[in-house]
Image (cartoon, rainbow over all chains, first blue to last red; front, side, top):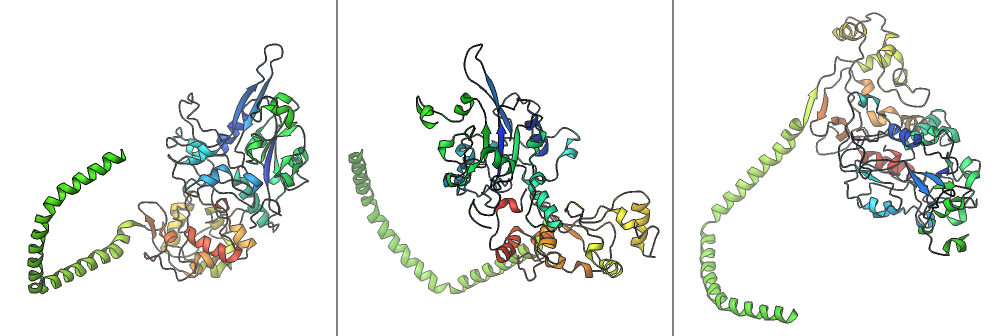
Length: 272
Length: 237
């Protein structure tokens, strides 16, 4: 395994077209059922709920008739960290090595049996993509039978987050090995649950290192600038933190792109 | 603050110095006393050492010999399965333990696979009779205890190892194919894991590659073969 992000290794990423997203929440539902995400009888306290994929609602803050709304799905960004060397904010602070950076996939792992729940990673994550299990999961009667055997359920006291449906990558690799293709996985063989569930087709998933893949065509990542999008309509959240996320957003609307980072007066104009 | 601290220090030093003189002289006296006693009571010390060694040995041995039998519960398999006989008949592991088309490993075969040969009772053994009457006729899958069952958080790809790396079954599973009887399944009462994960040897001594199935054993081989233990998600889910 090579220790860099630019070689032959995969670099899986996601592109979300915010102009297509209707905020229906299908991605959230698909994610929860795919990944055995626990829920409580009363989910009204949103600070306690676990949502690997979460749809945020943004507004441009203007009065009628200029009001505009944008829905923004937020999975884990699978940050490459400064310089895209794999020093993601969460990976850097974990005292238990319960989360690490996969140099072969660019995916940030979370190992529940290794995590002891200090929640440093949650503090370090600028995207609030990590969640803590305050309780043991309680499934309604009979629902345990519906849990996915490919994803291990979590216990009380550990942190969990989006894994880009890594078990689907494992399954795709199993098939590739079985068909003696070794590591050659086709674009369609590994897709996340949210990507497939989106009725608007707003989410695209694939290998950012492969120029043939749709994600690369959409954002044209600049490998010399840690994958910064060359498509002017594309952006990454909090780009200037140099976390180098692998989740890209696309929008024709300028206020949406501006909402992707915190700009002081005049900074946005300069950054354009 | 610093001033008051040093003052306090001086005070305590003064106050203690008064008492230490008395104590020192007292200690000296008792100290001499002690030495006298020691010279006389050598046999007592010897007994103490003997007692220590004996009790240490008892605790140590009970810990290593008794504890494992307390830690592991034993479960018999539903009925005995003769691997050697079946390997001789069918020709190899793959005839029963096969891959599915999607590359996942089927593991222990279901009844439907067994019935391909065992349409009716083939042998005269008691085990065969149990299999036919209790499971095939009633349409129940045999609830085998899986010796090599890994914890929930582990992802193991048989395809990567058997098809990709061309490894032998024996490397991890040992010579199960040559066995004629099924050993009792031992389950760790605390973790619920099979004993084969930790290994038969309670000291953790490993002589063969199939003696243990812990994460360290996976990592050791990965380090040798691929030059890296691999990222967490390579084997976890």
